[in-house]
Amino acid sequence: MLKSLKLGLLSAALLAAQPVLADGGFGLGRAATDAEVAAWDIDVRPDGAGLPEGSGSVFDGEEVYFEKCAVCHGDFGEAVGRWPVLAGGYDTLTSDRPVKTVGSYWPYLSTVWDYVHRAMPFGDAQSLTDDEVYSITAYILYLNDLVDDDFELSKENFAEVTLPNQDAFYMDDREESPVWSNRERCMTNCKDSVEIVARAAVLDVTPEDAAARKAKEAKGAAAEEPKAAEAKAEPAPAAEPVAVAAVAELDPALVEAGEKAFRQCKACHQVGDGAKNRVGPHLNAVFGRPAGGLDGFRYSKAMTAAGEGGKVWDDATMAAFLAAPKKVVPKTKMAFRGVKKEKDIDALIAYIKANGG
Image (cartoon, rainbow, N blue to C red):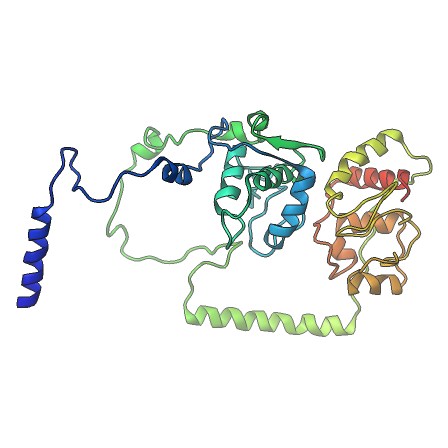
């Protein structure tokens, strides 16, 4: 007790001895140097203020993205596991399960650049060069169909890029809103008791007691038993083919539309003169070829097995695969979720055929 009292008196004496400056400080530390301030001051504003000199293209961004980002965010920005989705989600913001991506939700490109620069890649933040950040940002724009594949992002044209959802944001007006300001606030003892009345639909985050958890596990196990027996008794039904208009003569307008739709495929596939295997096989002469049948490309076991089982790429099979790859070839390593619109599928098939597919 006496020792604590002495320490307390000593601390008080030291504080009393500190010179109090005119500005209220205690004379501790020093002013930061210009270099230190510059190192900390890395934020970027919507008008481009704070951007460093540099540039990066979609082409360069693709390479850096696959090396640094795809392991978490997926080859097409579709996300792996519970990592954030970066692309897609158009027209979902008013749905029960909105998909908030750079293309569907984010208001400013500066937020993308700043976040990639400040916090990515996960576990190795601020290891990217400025040009790499420009390249990745350009590639994310491309994944969201906001720029063409020959686009190059730089400090000079940065402010010219507008994200689709920018005008849907507005200032938080809850302090002035009658809905908020006229409501009586309760901070303590607001209810006699608290009970869970609903559970999270998407994330398994709602607390539950041990009894509820055991009941849930037992229910799940009981439901799986008949499914397992069914699976052994009957083979899985084949995926229903997607109807595709017969392409006797290639419609130039359809081929042109297919060229645009093929942008989402270019990250992994090439077609036409000089086409090479990339993340996925090239698509020259693909129609009429067995699945997994291109020499020199390392397919997944699932795709090889599909070809050995007699699956051949024709209009109907290709259309079904483009719509839902994992439904047609379960366990395919192709991460793409599928083309949603039938007209885009028709256009893609026409474009691939017109370029030697």
